[in-house]
Length: 376
Image (cartoon, rainbow, N blue to C red; front, side):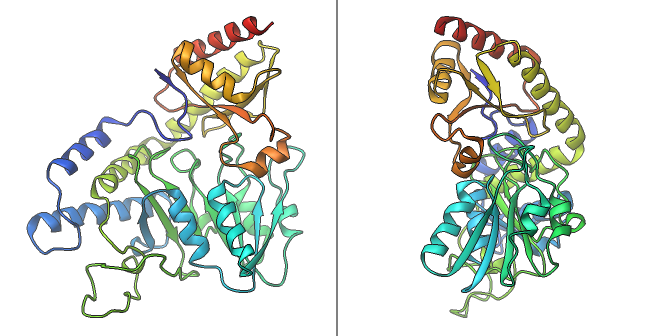
């Protein structure tokens, strides 16, 4: 199958990642929970991964790199663990349900209030529109690094400059991580949630939350941490405070190798994925029944629609007839589709990887052309 669903989860992994996972599953001990040689060796790999992510994303120290099973868990930890009664939040309409649903639940419970920043005329988020929503009790602004629907990248640094210093900036890096140079300290990001299994080339079950000294997230889970075991109180230091239970050593091992792979090739990856989106968009213009909602971007995401067919129908036909994997629907981002006017039919999303080829893109365009001819 030709795989163009990398925004959902990365299809192909680098050899170094596959080797790390194989090694971790053949001989695996519990890192940080025992004192024997194998456990200590695993703990060193976990520590190396914290260091690698801290360096790659210009973080605030390895102890403020917390592993999660995915980006959703990291975002829930950032929101539920930080927001308090009476806080106000500003969220962009681009956000994934991993941000919107926790905020919705907090608002229903009477804990917080939030306002949604709309799209501007260019299909992006304007810093001035964010600042216009500020209130005296605004605690946090949540803006994705890249839309998982269109691939649009909000101007994070300009947004940071447009809001007061006291306001926290949360960034959903599910799509941007591994594609964009997300520098936390340089940009002023206080909380960065990551999905290891997408642009960072790790396996499913890998994610992380990186956070600054300005935030003190409270744990969502309680249990064994391998430290302070004599006390029934959860440790008050990070990362132990937020990592109750056994870590997924195979996933973290893969994330370490994925982070190394990206660190050495970030510019190459961004250039490659941008070129693939540009090539596809040029070809799509030759198919009048299709309309695009994206511009060339380093995250490899292109959203498009057929004039007559629903997005899920196109996705299903591409899979069944041509063995091509794309995604149709709302992509768990309902406010973005509402803003684009595509809430009823959704959008088809092709998301390209560094490992995809121009030949594969040509085959997708050919398939779309044949599908369109059948519908005339």
